[in-house]
Length: 228
Image (cartoon, rainbow, N blue to C red):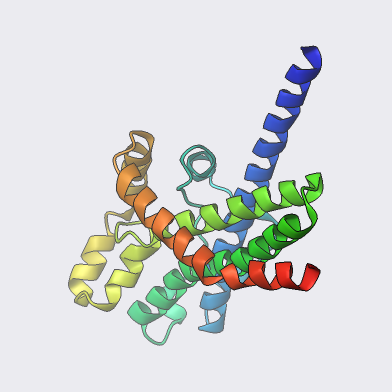
């Protein structure tokens, strides 16, 4: 019995560790992509603030990290952006904002291909503990990236979607809308904590996960064919 309890504790600890690692990867890719987009558009602020770092510790927001771990939707510490460097402030902010969620979807799709390849190996050669754990980790990366990407597309300040919305809003209305950005974070924490958006966000995430997995299923078939 003690051995069984120890095994359960180990499995739970491993699963939690893998989830933390997956969350940190998602957050790091998201924020670095914001910073790189801004830098390519002429804004050096993120680089000068050392936010083009691949060290995820530089990008952690405590509440956002907690939300990512517990409910699968959250945010990171915003990358500093100075829109005055952009030739067109609204379009520059929109492109910079979209870079974060877009990078999460790209990473999720590429990870889906690797996930399907690992499943192909497992199907052809039987279960191997390392590959089973790797498949679990890759599955978490897919789900969390898609969840982070979808959540940040919500057009509500301070999420990325609010800045993308600026493309279609008149300038006066847009900057008036963004004036309430500092209050939005508190409201977002409450919304996530009480599960107000759980159903629609989970539905959108699950649909996108299934789309990506179905689109990459050819990888699993190709690996199985090559190993048999």
